[in-house]
Amino acid sequence: MYNNPSRQRLRNSAIAVAAIAMLATGLALWSNHTGEQQNQERAAMANTKIVYVPDPVQKLLKRTDGSYYKVTPYTDTYEYTTTEDDDRVVRRSVSAKERISHPSFLWYRSTITHDITVRVIQPHAADQRPRVERLRCTIGPVDASKPSYTGAPHGRNWLRIGYDEQGTDVGGLNSLFSSDGPQLCRDQITILVPDGGIQP
Image 1 (cartoon, rainbow, N blue to C red):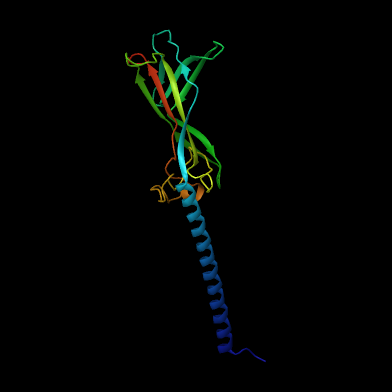
Image 2 (image 1 turned 90 degrees about the vertical axis):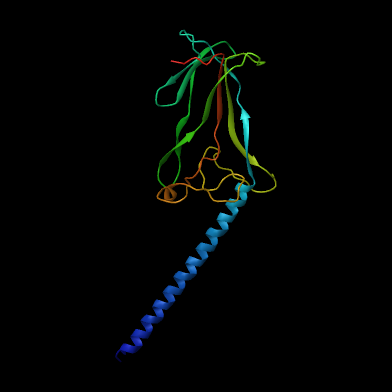
């Protein structure tokens, strides 16, 4: 028996139609699954709130030049000297930008930002100690009985905490390697000094 060309064409057409139908079904199922995941993420983010937890206050020591801290040019790093509870003198620093490792599809380093301000202690303020105060950014559920975001509080996400809406930084090549979007929250660091003189 020989192959009839018209029968062969029908068979090829049937195979092509079946392949397209299977592909369309797979895409529809994947799209549905992705949509459900996004809805769950939106609900979790909407049920998440930012909570600031204070660190122990660090007492600032006056440096030999009469200042309380030093700023490293171009890096927004503030270096200072403080004392521990056992009166040990310790050198410390805080930086407005910090690079961290961020696990993803490929090894990737991310930069997180802290809000650092220098404030002059007013003469009428109850606490006159030169000091560093830090409020660490953490996250928690609005309703503990419902799912909430459990990732890194300083991380970046395409959804905003507390809002059922998409962030503005989505897309591009970054989205292939991470959920790169707005930083969810920042630590708030305040350096309180008795005068506003320029710090070398």
